[in-house]
Amino acid sequence: MTDGFPAPASARLPGAARLRGAWRAQHLMWTEAWCLWTRRPLPSAAWARALGDGQRFALRRGSWMSVLVPMVVFSQFVDVLVAQGAIHVVAAGRRALLLHALLLLASLWTVAWAVSLRSATRHVGHVLDAHALTLAVGFAHVCRVPLAAIAGVRAIDHRSARGHQDWYDVHGLEPREVTCLAALDAPTLLIELRSGAAGAWWTRHGVRRPLRRWIAVQADEPAAMAGAIAARLAPAIACDA
Figure 1 (spheres, one colour):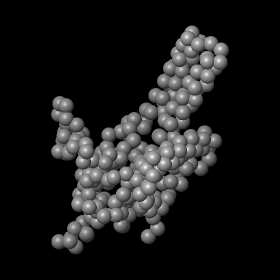
Figure 2 (tube, rainbow, N blue to C red; figure 1 turned 60 degrees about the horizontal axis):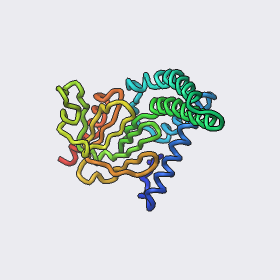
Figure 3 (tube, rainbow, N blue to C red; figure 1 turned 135 degrees about the vertical axis):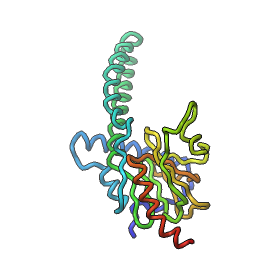
Figure 4 (tube, rainbow, N blue to C red; figure 1 turned 180 degrees about the vertical axis):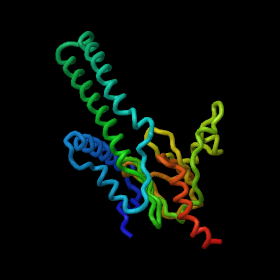
Protein backbone atom coordinates (compact mmCIF):
# COMPACT_ATOMS: atom_id res chain seq x y z
CA MET A 1 0.00 0.00 0.00
CA THR A 2 1.36 3.45 -0.93
CA ASP A 3 1.12 6.04 1.81
CA GLY A 4 1.41 9.66 0.69
CA PHE A 5 2.18 10.68 4.26
CA PRO A 6 4.61 8.20 5.84
CA ALA A 7 5.38 8.51 9.54
CA PRO A 8 7.80 11.43 9.98
CA ALA A 9 11.00 11.05 11.96
CA SER A 10 11.32 12.89 15.25
CA ALA A 11 13.19 16.17 14.84
CA ARG A 12 16.68 16.37 16.33
CA LEU A 13 16.40 20.16 16.54
CA PRO A 14 12.80 20.99 17.58
CA GLY A 15 13.34 24.74 17.21
CA ALA A 16 14.54 24.40 13.62
CA ALA A 17 11.68 22.03 12.83
CA ARG A 18 9.15 24.56 14.11
CA LEU A 19 10.71 27.32 12.00
CA ARG A 20 10.53 25.10 8.92
CA GLY A 21 6.92 24.29 9.78
CA ALA A 22 6.04 27.99 10.12
CA TRP A 23 7.70 28.79 6.79
CA ARG A 24 5.92 25.86 5.15
CA ALA A 25 2.56 27.01 6.53
CA GLN A 26 3.08 30.54 5.18
CA HIS A 27 4.14 29.22 1.77
CA LEU A 28 1.09 26.97 1.47
CA MET A 29 -1.24 29.73 2.66
CA TRP A 30 -0.06 32.29 0.08
CA THR A 31 0.10 29.69 -2.70
CA GLU A 32 -3.48 28.56 -2.03
CA ALA A 33 -4.74 32.15 -2.01
CA TRP A 34 -2.82 33.00 -5.20
CA CYS A 35 -4.10 29.91 -7.03
CA LEU A 36 -7.68 30.73 -6.03
CA TRP A 37 -7.31 34.27 -7.36
CA THR A 38 -5.65 33.19 -10.64
CA ARG A 39 -7.91 30.11 -11.02
CA ARG A 40 -5.00 27.68 -11.14
CA PRO A 41 -4.98 24.10 -9.77
CA LEU A 42 -5.15 24.29 -6.00
CA PRO A 43 -2.39 22.89 -3.75
CA SER A 44 -5.13 21.65 -1.41
CA ALA A 45 -6.58 19.45 -4.19
CA ALA A 46 -3.19 17.81 -4.73
CA TRP A 47 -2.78 17.48 -0.96
CA ALA A 48 -6.14 15.69 -0.73
CA ARG A 49 -5.18 13.25 -3.51
CA ALA A 50 -1.91 12.46 -1.74
CA LEU A 51 -3.87 11.20 1.26
CA GLY A 52 -4.66 8.09 -0.76
CA ASP A 53 -7.77 6.21 -1.82
CA GLY A 54 -10.63 5.29 0.45
CA GLN A 55 -13.90 6.50 1.87
CA ARG A 56 -13.77 10.27 2.34
CA PHE A 57 -15.47 12.47 4.91
CA ALA A 58 -15.63 16.21 4.29
CA LEU A 59 -15.35 19.26 6.56
CA ARG A 60 -17.34 21.75 4.50
CA ARG A 61 -20.32 22.58 6.69
CA GLY A 62 -18.63 24.20 9.66
CA SER A 63 -20.40 27.38 10.69
CA TRP A 64 -17.16 29.31 11.10
CA MET A 65 -15.98 28.22 7.65
CA SER A 66 -19.21 29.53 6.11
CA VAL A 67 -18.92 33.03 7.55
CA LEU A 68 -15.15 33.40 7.96
CA VAL A 69 -14.20 34.96 4.62
CA PRO A 70 -17.13 37.46 4.35
CA MET A 71 -16.62 38.49 7.97
CA VAL A 72 -12.87 39.02 7.59
CA VAL A 73 -13.13 40.89 4.28
CA PHE A 74 -15.86 43.18 5.60
CA SER A 75 -13.93 43.88 8.80
CA GLN A 76 -10.85 44.80 6.79
CA PHE A 77 -12.75 47.45 4.84
CA VAL A 78 -14.00 49.02 8.05
CA ASP A 79 -11.04 48.57 10.39
CA VAL A 80 -8.36 49.48 7.87
CA LEU A 81 -10.06 52.71 6.88
CA VAL A 82 -10.38 53.72 10.53
CA ALA A 83 -6.77 52.75 11.28
CA GLN A 84 -5.45 54.57 8.21
CA GLY A 85 -7.24 57.71 9.35
CA ALA A 86 -5.78 57.36 12.83
CA ILE A 87 -2.26 57.08 11.37
CA HIS A 88 -2.69 60.46 9.66
CA VAL A 89 -3.48 61.98 13.05
CA VAL A 90 -0.70 60.44 15.15
CA ALA A 91 2.18 60.19 12.65
CA ALA A 92 3.74 62.00 9.74
CA GLY A 93 6.53 61.62 7.18
CA ARG A 94 8.43 58.34 6.94
CA ARG A 95 6.91 57.02 10.13
CA ALA A 96 3.42 57.38 8.66
CA LEU A 97 4.48 55.65 5.43
CA LEU A 98 5.95 52.77 7.42
CA LEU A 99 2.80 52.40 9.50
CA HIS A 100 0.63 52.50 6.36
CA ALA A 101 2.76 49.75 4.77
CA LEU A 102 2.65 47.57 7.89
CA LEU A 103 -1.11 47.99 8.16
CA LEU A 104 -1.59 47.08 4.50
CA LEU A 105 0.61 43.99 4.87
CA ALA A 106 -1.30 42.87 7.98
CA SER A 107 -4.61 43.36 6.17
CA LEU A 108 -3.47 41.36 3.14
CA TRP A 109 -2.13 38.59 5.40
CA THR A 110 -5.44 38.37 7.27
CA VAL A 111 -7.50 38.09 4.07
CA ALA A 112 -5.09 35.53 2.55
CA TRP A 113 -5.20 33.49 5.79
CA ALA A 114 -9.00 33.43 5.86
CA VAL A 115 -9.35 32.58 2.16
CA SER A 116 -6.72 29.83 2.18
CA LEU A 117 -7.94 28.30 5.46
CA ARG A 118 -11.50 28.07 4.16
CA SER A 119 -10.38 26.64 0.81
CA ALA A 120 -7.97 24.09 2.26
CA THR A 121 -10.45 22.93 4.90
CA ARG A 122 -13.15 22.42 2.29
CA HIS A 123 -10.93 20.53 -0.16
CA VAL A 124 -9.05 18.29 2.28
CA GLY A 125 -10.97 15.70 4.28
CA HIS A 126 -10.52 12.52 6.28
CA VAL A 127 -9.82 9.23 4.47
CA LEU A 128 -10.72 5.75 5.70
CA ASP A 129 -9.11 2.83 3.88
CA ALA A 130 -8.81 -0.88 4.58
CA HIS A 131 -5.82 -0.45 6.89
CA ALA A 132 -5.87 2.96 8.52
CA LEU A 133 -7.73 6.20 9.15
CA THR A 134 -6.07 9.40 7.92
CA LEU A 135 -7.36 12.54 9.63
CA ALA A 136 -6.53 15.80 7.87
CA VAL A 137 -7.56 19.38 8.57
CA GLY A 138 -6.41 21.65 5.76
CA PHE A 139 -2.65 21.88 5.49
CA ALA A 140 -2.14 22.12 9.25
CA HIS A 141 -2.95 18.69 10.68
CA VAL A 142 -2.25 15.18 9.40
CA CYS A 143 -2.90 12.21 11.69
CA ARG A 144 -2.47 8.59 10.62
CA VAL A 145 -4.10 5.94 12.82
CA PRO A 146 -3.95 2.22 11.95
CA LEU A 147 -7.32 0.56 12.47
CA ALA A 148 -5.66 -1.85 14.89
CA ALA A 149 -4.82 1.12 17.14
CA ILE A 150 -8.46 2.29 17.44
CA ALA A 151 -10.36 1.11 20.51
CA GLY A 152 -13.63 2.87 19.77
CA VAL A 153 -15.34 5.82 18.14
CA ARG A 154 -18.37 7.96 18.97
CA ALA A 155 -20.07 11.14 17.83
CA ILE A 156 -19.73 14.13 20.17
CA ASP A 157 -23.11 15.23 21.50
CA HIS A 158 -22.91 18.98 22.11
CA ARG A 159 -26.64 19.17 22.84
CA SER A 160 -26.21 17.17 26.07
CA ALA A 161 -24.24 19.99 27.71
CA ARG A 162 -25.98 21.68 30.62
CA GLY A 163 -25.13 25.00 32.27
CA HIS A 164 -21.38 25.57 32.18
CA GLN A 165 -20.66 22.09 30.81
CA ASP A 166 -18.85 21.59 27.56
CA TRP A 167 -18.34 18.43 25.48
CA TYR A 168 -15.36 17.42 27.64
CA ASP A 169 -17.67 17.21 30.67
CA VAL A 170 -20.39 15.40 28.71
CA HIS A 171 -17.95 12.64 27.74
CA GLY A 172 -16.10 12.58 31.06
CA LEU A 173 -12.77 13.76 29.66
CA GLU A 174 -10.06 16.23 30.57
CA PRO A 175 -8.52 18.48 27.88
CA ARG A 176 -5.07 17.05 28.66
CA GLU A 177 -6.33 13.62 27.53
CA VAL A 178 -7.45 14.79 24.09
CA THR A 179 -5.65 15.69 20.87
CA CYS A 180 -8.01 18.14 19.17
CA LEU A 181 -7.80 18.28 15.37
CA ALA A 182 -10.11 21.09 14.35
CA ALA A 183 -9.88 24.42 12.58
CA LEU A 184 -12.33 26.90 14.11
CA ASP A 185 -15.42 24.75 14.59
CA ALA A 186 -16.07 22.48 17.56
CA PRO A 187 -15.11 18.81 17.00
CA THR A 188 -17.93 16.39 16.21
CA LEU A 189 -16.23 12.98 16.48
CA LEU A 190 -14.24 11.33 19.26
CA ILE A 191 -11.80 8.48 18.61
CA GLU A 192 -10.30 6.39 21.41
CA LEU A 193 -6.86 4.85 20.90
CA ARG A 194 -5.66 1.59 22.37
CA SER A 195 -2.86 1.58 24.92
CA GLY A 196 0.39 2.22 23.08
CA ALA A 197 -1.39 2.95 19.77
CA ALA A 198 1.41 1.39 17.74
CA GLY A 199 1.90 3.06 14.37
CA ALA A 200 -0.27 6.10 15.11
CA TRP A 201 1.24 9.57 14.60
CA TRP A 202 0.26 13.21 14.23
CA THR A 203 1.97 16.23 12.70
CA ARG A 204 1.10 19.90 12.86
CA HIS A 205 2.60 22.00 10.06
CA GLY A 206 4.92 19.10 9.31
CA VAL A 207 6.26 18.83 12.86
CA ARG A 208 5.58 15.61 14.75
CA ARG A 209 3.58 16.08 17.94
CA PRO A 210 2.69 13.70 20.80
CA LEU A 211 -0.61 11.89 20.32
CA ARG A 212 -2.91 11.47 23.32
CA ARG A 213 -5.36 8.69 24.14
CA TRP A 214 -8.36 10.47 22.60
CA ILE A 215 -8.58 12.29 19.25
CA ALA A 216 -11.32 14.85 18.64
CA VAL A 217 -11.99 15.84 15.03
CA GLN A 218 -14.58 17.80 13.07
CA ALA A 219 -16.56 16.14 10.26
CA ASP A 220 -19.75 17.06 8.43
CA GLU A 221 -21.39 13.68 9.09
CA PRO A 222 -19.97 12.34 12.37
CA ALA A 223 -22.55 9.56 12.73
CA ALA A 224 -21.81 8.22 9.25
CA MET A 225 -18.08 8.44 9.83
CA ALA A 226 -18.36 6.70 13.21
CA GLY A 227 -20.46 3.95 11.61
CA ALA A 228 -17.95 3.43 8.80
CA ILE A 229 -15.04 3.20 11.23
CA ALA A 230 -16.96 0.81 13.49
CA ALA A 231 -17.77 -1.39 10.48
CA ARG A 232 -14.05 -1.58 9.64
CA LEU A 233 -13.22 -2.44 13.24
CA ALA A 234 -15.85 -5.19 13.56
CA PRO A 235 -13.87 -7.93 11.71
CA ALA A 236 -10.75 -7.18 13.78
CA ILE A 237 -12.73 -7.32 17.02
CA ALA A 238 -14.29 -10.61 15.96
CA CYS A 239 -10.85 -12.07 15.22
CA ASP A 240 -9.54 -10.95 18.63
CA ALA A 241 -12.53 -12.60 20.30
